[in-house]
Image: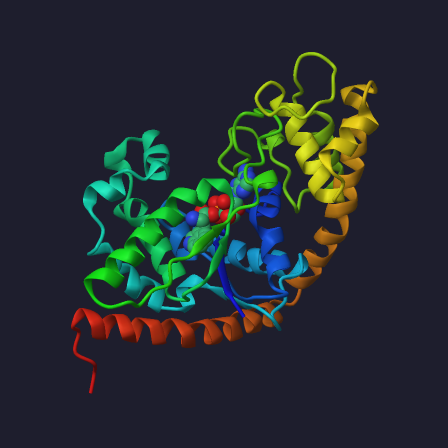
Length: 332
Ligand code: TYM
């Protein structure tokens, strides 16, 4: 079975609809016919300062959310990045193959370091994409399900794989990004041209999966819409309405064209009210299940331990090949 791998950072109390529709839903779907590796990227999280107590708590909340949405430990290895040391170990080797200028071209570093200046950013933030390449290449996956914002990191990953294969010996598979066009970039409800993101200036624009359902409904009903009153999918001209149509269509599996027809002439209010109901119906059971799972931390940590064991076996085998090929002497 083809392999898939993906990761998510535990940097918020809850995942949001961008994470879910852009990536996590595909994790769940791809389990059926693939061999999946899914992890919580706590080492990526510390590239910016994190409160240790919160990081630990959010890592477990992330695990609970993954299980609640249907990531199944019987089919998928679910694990925490820091529990598989091979990620950091391969990252070092790949850093030595990455050009300084090449790393500097990563737009996420430019964006994230812009606020306080490059000098204040950590070196970890700079080499973040190389750790991500290591995460991926260790498992030799065929596909990496992510949102559009990860495309550049996937390109670097392929470049590094190719460079290693060429310089030493064919070791890595070149992974394909698995990005669903319809939901590749879910946007902020208050700033519909910007991506929905946990670092947004206002929480009103982000629908969090673990928000009180009432709160989510209110956010949907208060979403910024565009001038005019026509309900039409047009991301350039009508980014607000188009984003709502995208979310509506993704949650109900109804084609956008059907929704356009149904709401034709009925105004923005009707669309928002109905979408609020659809969102509430989705988040209510999800939230209940997540909170239940969080009550049994022994079970969660056990799932993660088993996941790390499965993933670690694969990752260490790749790392052994790499160490041998670069000329490290194996321990006797
Ligand atoms: P992260 O934690 O920021 O986001 C997790 C996933 O959610 C997707 N996503 C979105 N998709 C559509 N619209 C949005 N508004 C939106 N916001 C977030 C992201 O594209 C991502 O797929 N660097 C990664 C974590 C990572 C990783 C990896 C991913 C570390 N190692 C290896 C894949 C493979 C990140 O920060 O994702």
